Length: 219
Image (cartoon, rainbow, N blue to C red; front, side, top):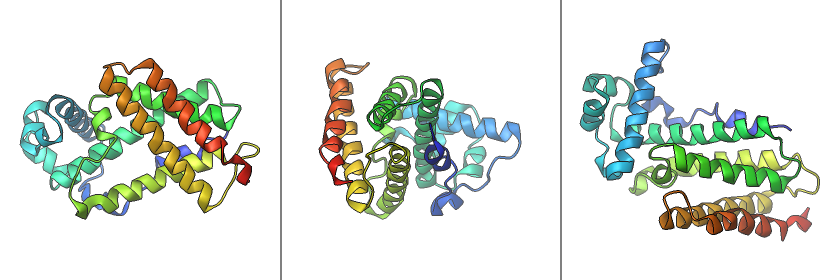
């Protein structure tokens, strides 16, 4: 099974990546950055995105606030860093799942992506909230759209290796719709239960797969 589109997704450097002031080279710096991002997830779970401030992150992480600013010059850069961190952790869960059990069909591949998202929601602090929009102002929506397009590209690339899968702009758009359908059903599932309502989680796979299947004849 070819998962290059997912591994390549993990290497993307966005235009705003320069907001990360210093890319950590030493192990200690990498650990500090990891701690900062993990603490952000914990704070998001506890008090929402509004509770994430550089001062509170530094206090919770037991590090100097200057260490936070060394990586992130402002709160916007910090929240984008959290978003990318969460998404990368989810994609790694999916890659591990495919390594353990390669998908034999595009339907199976899509199901594994959904199941990996569910695992991320259950195990990664802050993921359930961070998986959606975390900065409400219009000025930053382009940054999220860029990330969304990149993820849809990765999923389209993953599915394209299977026989009978369409291509082209219309199919790309439908994959994007399928991803959003699944996310919405997952959100409803976790609104009903901390572990996710089983029936709704099944629908989070079935509904988007059925939707894409209805258009697979467009190949």
